[in-house]
Structure formats: structure tokens, C-alpha cells
Image (cartoon, rainbow, N blue to C red; front, side):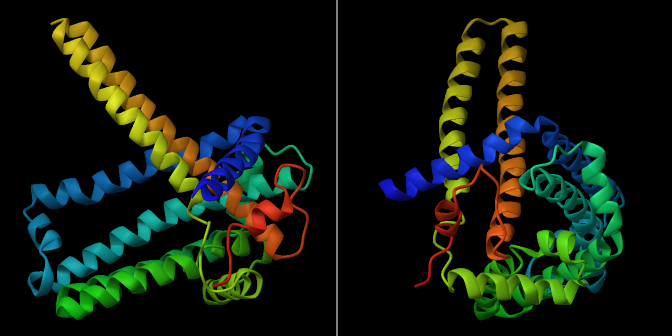
Length: 282
């Protein structure tokens, strides 16, 4: 446990070193989050206002065909947004790992140059997402179990798809196969430390949430509206900041992992043995 915590912290520090060198990389998760919220609102607010939202949110076999079509459309648009900004972030991080000095426009330039593949991969991911949802809804307990593990397998298999798309220009299917092959040939089958960064940020949330709640309670005790609003705003901003930094660092780390898998240098920020320790064979 202590070794896992130590490695996780080293990964965060290495990714943070890149982020400190290029603070503008935070623009990508910020804009991505705003765009994702707009997409969600544009789909679900009209759905609820028209009464269609109930069909979308129905569970098991009660979900209608129209509900699945709605979910596919939502997944598709949402994934396009997520993969586009992730590609921009990874593309900019690659420039930094090459010793360059990326700008926000460099990241968007990289994403724009691979837009067709991003759209194709988003369509594939949306199809998989809906298929897993159908399996969970209509396959009983067994279907739910298969769907859960299928989703986990898909997440692991596609861990390096974005950097593959950005660097190799492969189509969606070829990119997924390439991502899976890179994981298998370099680290074996069992993901051992890839969630280390999430573990560290999980601790950050565990600290921030109780502290924020205590601060809000303390502000409420003063019966000052200004103090209460200030405490709530600061708490929300702190939680959002943690999430945005985590998103930026995860994208940077994914770029470094891909570079290591390809046998390329990862720059002076990531010690090669530390990156290799992110995945271990059984």
C-alpha cells in the first residue's frame, strides 16, 4: 500500500511538472467541462419538459426503443466533445514531451487535424455504450454483470486510443486494436497502477469535502448570508478545481504512457521506470 501511494504521488508530481510548464493546458478540461454541461442540458432539459425524459430514464426492459436512440445521440455528441478536447490536450502534451513549448492553438490544431477519426471513434464508443445499456436492461442479473465487466474491459482496452489517434492517424477500429496491443505487449494483462492518480485525487476529495462541509456549517452558524454564500462558492470552486486538475494531469500522463509504450522518450518529467510501473503483469 505504501509503495502504491508513493508511486501514485510520483506520477502526480511528474504530470504536475508538465502542467506547471504549460498551465494553459488547463484550458482544455475547462472548456470540455463547460461544453459537456451544455450538451447535457440541451438533451435532457427538453426531454424532461416534453415528458420524454421518463422514457429515457426507465430501467430494464421498460426503456423504449426511442429511449435508446436518444441515449445514442446523447452519447455520440458527448463523446465527440470529450474526445476532441482530450485529443487537443494529449496533442499539446506530446509537444511538451518532445521538448517543445505548446500553445492552446497547437492543441486545437492537432484535434482538428484528426476530427474525422474523432467522430468515428465517438460513434463507435456510443454504439458500445448503448449495447452495454441494452444488455444491462434486458439481460437480467447476468446481463448486468456482463455489461459491468464489458464496460471495464472496454475502458482498459481503449486507454491509449486518444494518443494513438493523435500520433498514428489510425481509424477508430484500428486505434482500439492498437491500444489493446500496446497494453498487452508492454505491461501484461493486469492493470496495477493506472488508477494510482485517481487514488491520490480520491484522497484530495476525501479531505476537501469534509473541510468544505464544516466550513459551510460554520458559516451557517454565523447566520450571515454573505458568509454562507461565500463558503458554498469556495467549496464548489475547490471541488471543480480538483476535478479539472485531475483531468489535465490524466491527459498528460496518458501521453507519457503512450510514448513509453512506443519505446520513445518521455522527456525529463517522467522517469521511465515510474511510467512502466503503471502497469504490471500478473
